[in-house]
Image (cartoon, rainbow, N blue to C red; front, side):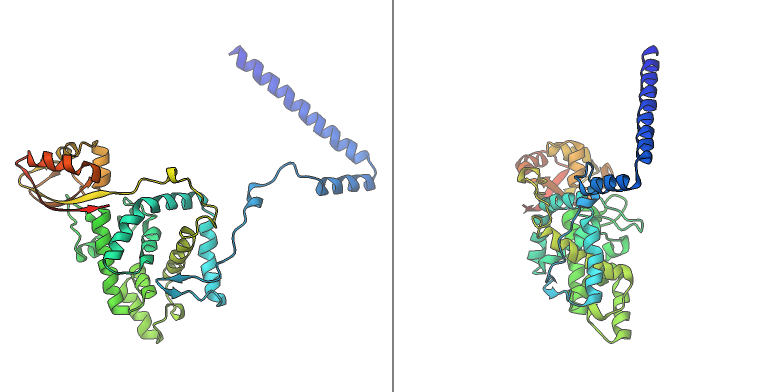
Length: 340
C-alpha cells in the first residue's frame, strides 16, 4: 500500500511540474513581441511535424475506369451511377480489417462455391453475391431470421428443396444451401433474363422487380427506380468483386501461409436405421465434436432420428469413416461425392 501511495505522490509532483513548465512557456511567449510570436508559429507550421494523424495517411485508389458484373458493363461514366457506386466502394475500402478476413475466407470457401457455380454453367460473379449476403460466414443469421451463407429465410429455403425442421436446417449446409441458391437464381434468370435484375430480385423479392418492370416500362436495372437497399446491394456486389479480384491494387497482400485452409470434404448420404447420437459420427471421423459440428452445421440436435441425411467428412478422413460406418449395423452409406 505504501508503495502505491509513493508512486501516486511522485506522479502528482511530475504533473504539477509539467504544468508549471507549460504555463511558464506560455507566459514567455506572451511577453515576446507580436512579430516574434508570429514568426515562431510560422516556423512550427513549416517545420517537420512530430505527430501525424493515422487518418491523414489513408488514401484510396480512384474508381476503376471500367467494371462488369455477370458480363454486363456498369456505366460508371454516368454521374448518378458513378456516385452510387462510389458510396459503396469507398465505404468498403474503409474496412480494411474486414476486407482482409474476406480475402482469407474467399480462399477457404471460394473453390467449393465456384465448383458448384461452374457445374450449373452460371456466371462466376455470383460468388460475390454470397460474399455480400453473409461475408462467407456459414453461421450468419440476420435480424429477419435469414440464415446461412446464402441467407435463406425458412419459407424460401423449403421451397427450394432444403430440409428444415427441428433436427435439420440445411440453410447452414455450405454445399446444400449453395445448390439451392443457384437453383433459385437460375429460375429468376429464366424469368428476368438479366443477371442484375436476378440479383436485385434475390435481395428484394421477385414480386417487387416484376412490379417495377410493369410500371416503369423498362427492364434495365440502371433505369429502374427500386428500393434504396436493393440499388445499394448491386453496387456492393460490384465493389467487392473489384476489390477481391485486385487485392494487390488495394494493398491486401497476404502471405500464402496465412490464407485459411480450403474447405475440402466428401459428401455422404447417410442412412440412420435407429436413433443415433451425433457424437458417434464424430468418433467415426476421428474428430472432436466441435470440428465435426463446424463441418456439419445443418445438424441441429445431438440425436438424429431414423432417416436419411447429408453428411460432410474431411477428405483425408473418408477411408477411416467408411470403415467405421461399416462396423455399425445401425448406419449405412447410400452414396458419396468428393467436394475438393
